[in-house]
Length: 351
Image 1 (tube, rainbow, N blue to C red):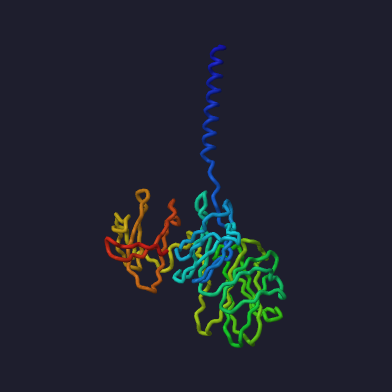
Image 2: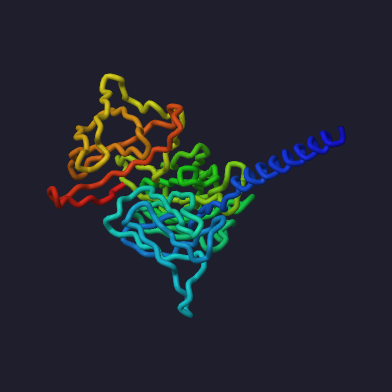
């Protein structure tokens, strides 16, 4: 009986040791490096054909990581101080004249990998940056007409701006926040020189105002619940437009969810199934826009390539629905411009 007991004890101890090793292995497999996160860029955008400094904040970032953008027309290099040493988290960004206006993605390339992305705006108007407190009428920041100001909201405060305009001018005041990854729900108010409210916008729209008399006017901006902090940033545009002009809003990212598919106007009558093989450019399936394609990512690492012809100035919308259809996928789209003739064709990433 004693011998049997020792054998059972040895077996139980061995079983516990194996279980402990398996548990340790499972825990070891769950350990991973921290993921880098890009949280803010300041300013949040710039004018085409200009160069300016951009300061970033984030998590798990090194002081001298590389700042990258989704379009080759936006480039960045580490800013150097007067002593020739790199300035931490600060970059000299250049936007080429050929860079398309709109929202592009900014990411940081780190030793831990590529960070999350943030919206970076490229526009055609001169830009300014809020550098000092303007939380009272006396310290209001002066804005030029047809310009954009990059600002960060102070908690439980109101930001004040002033501009001058002639009688009869049509003034558009547009504030971008949610559409550029900000947490701010902005309230925008147009007031007279004394700060008395003339027009208020609380729903994220634009202020469209005709100047009643030549003089100075005030713009007040605050959060709907007076929130503030580094993640409550915004871009404020003040434009002088013709009375009959159609107003274009500041660029904004589009919300994508199960409810954003199908897009308006899509019908099942124009569905066209992809034709394999079409992984390589030489095998690209020729299509004519507009069209609705169906396909599959199979086998692993499958890439579907399509070729179309477009004219300069045309605007096309390309959208992929896969994850929204309940599939375990994360689609990526690249649009390339093809120049030259085979076999010397040149492919250049456009979007």
